[in-house]
Image (tube, rainbow, N blue to C red):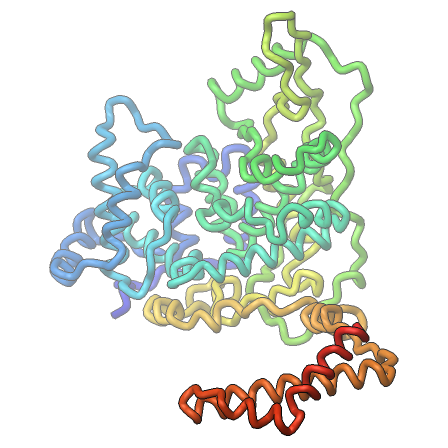
Length: 506
């Protein structure tokens, strides 16, 4: 069954370009996102707010999804980051969220719920009217976050591999430092999985992030996450200098303090208050953070053959040349503690000025332009399969799989992400083979003299005689009377003498 009741109108490339430009402005789409998001998701509103609910009651009233128990657990702890109005019943909102989630999965039983999915749908619930919520949630699930809705999270780990390569081409030295503490950027996993909705502290901020992501290919969530990691370079180096490498994961797992200049009241008050808390300027002069996107020539990014990813939609709007750098603010000074006060915090604990969300989004576009998905160093087409959303998504509805086709793709994980291959060295030998050869010890010839040969042969004769005696005696019922006969033949004296010789030689 395909849930599309009507075909949404087509949107031209110019519309997408204007939406991308609008998303870079302070505040993003603002109130217009109620109209723009459904267009970007190719979602069709219900004929009435209760139309979709009536259809679901008729079709799936008695069919429950296997993940509804986990959905219930997650909805019971929802609406924590985005506090609701004091006049709104939080329990009622949780009930609405639970009902919406259950409807999505009962309509699309081929999808699998993952923890954090409810954070994504919460943003839709708090932004869109009721008649648009189900359609937008379904389209978002099938066409943008489908890779995460299989039976495993291997596709998301694939995006982490892509992100690792992106960090390598953007800043090799910094990437090498990060990989010393974590082979993959696992600290970015929640952001990739939930489109930043799990940790973004304010609803207007995550709405602006959604404005940015929904009008761009799905791969942009990797670029946005990479930019945030690159902006923490100064803090990471400070931790390294202080011998606190173990704190890097905690630092990079948390988002920096982000504000949108369009916001008023609490956000701006926080920034002013932060400035007032710095009565003692640093003694040293301000030093700009290092640039982490090098100047890249066109020939440095050859386009590999065979990569026909539709994820490489050009960002046509002008983007100001920006450097990926941390905030240029001074660190908050710490007053010298008195004798009874607690010891001072490490320097990395000092607060920094909030970062502008619009600046971060512009830097993400700049990183995309410097190192697009077709960059051979990113290896996108070697990591993600042809049925990944990074390749099946398109701004045009007719170029994407239908909802039914998209649901079936979840059952083919081998076409969504490829298994990780051992890295290949310059000489063409992979690391696995290199490790095998390193562990294999070469055979060394040893000089063997006649005494050693005699000892070995003698030991063999003794062992053979002992075994023969044991076997023979067993066959004779355990009676060792025959040993006397051997002694008469002198065998016992010969064996005993041989043992004396061996003991002497050794």
